[in-house]
Image (cartoon, rainbow, N blue to C red; front, side):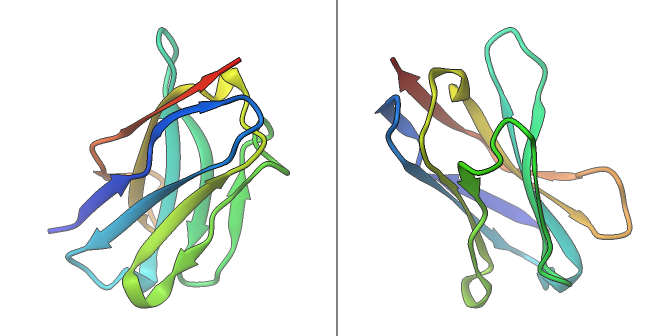
Amino acid sequence: QVQLLESGGGLVQAGDSLRLNCAASGRTFSSFVMGWFRQAPGKEREFVAGFNWSDGTTSYADSVKGRFTIPRDNAKNTVYLQMNSLKPEDTAVYYCAARLKFLQKYNYWGQGTQVVVSS
């Protein structure tokens, strides 16, 4: 049973940095792709960033490129979302997700963590 446990959300001011954590357990994750998604009030959930454990590649939404990175700790099966230069429009509930690398759909989700960026 795959479990994803997020932490690290909070209230920050515009321009600040924040790091979210996603601790994964229950499987060997070398064949998984990890993703960060977010959902703002009244909006659909959107992809933010992804990391492929098998080849180390990363991907980012255009809205966060240059500001967010997705560091990871292989030994701890943990991925992070390092968010710099935060903007009020980054306010959302952030979710960690996982899928097997040959699947398109993310089928494992964390509980979400709230990020609020004040102007």
